[in-house]
Length: 288
Image 1 (cartoon, rainbow, N blue to C red):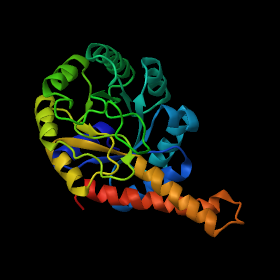
Image 2: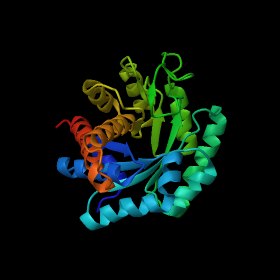
Image 3: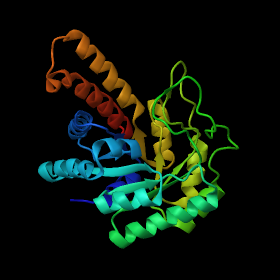
Image 4: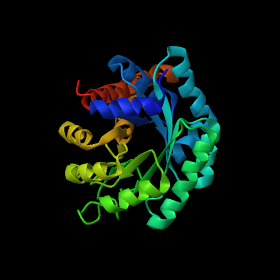
């Protein structure tokens, strides 16, 4: 079976993107997996520090790899927004296919220093492990916001600069880069998310020559995704939209079945809701 690195190389050549979807329970994982099977496309399962703490680091790896082995399917697992070098080592040792160190709130020099440590550690373990770095702050939480996240890089002068991106990639050796290009984590309650800066994506892509990752994809329009992918994005992260779909479907399921106490029965609708969102996104990412 092809590795994640090979799948990303293929996606980049085809100007399509691999979908990255976060989980914190089993039914969300099944919803994502069923959607990917229906579209017949590779998929990445992500877990943040908090999600890994809830699911279990090694347990998450076992779940995802069991699907890959049983169904001979290109499903991969990524440690999303790892907050320290120690936690990075933990996920690499546990068998994650990829991991992202998030030093976006650190001074650039410190971010470079720790990200480089992560890259070197991963390569000592297995040359196929992918390390992602981030420069430019886009907020922290995948939730519904009443106002824009404080400090998020949204104005043109605050976006990730191509010169900084080039320096970061050259000095760290990362395989993937997540820049701030107008994206935010989460979604706004009563407004559209800010527009992505497609021109800046293209500028950064040209100077770093590695796949770019779009975080905070929830709430962006299909045409924005496709423009971003054409400009250099190879992975798109979706989390908040899945959480919203799951919660709304769960509330409806419980209201319509107030006497039901079997989780595997009242959780079927949340699973289907997640699957529907993922299928829609994967069609967009793959121009289907």
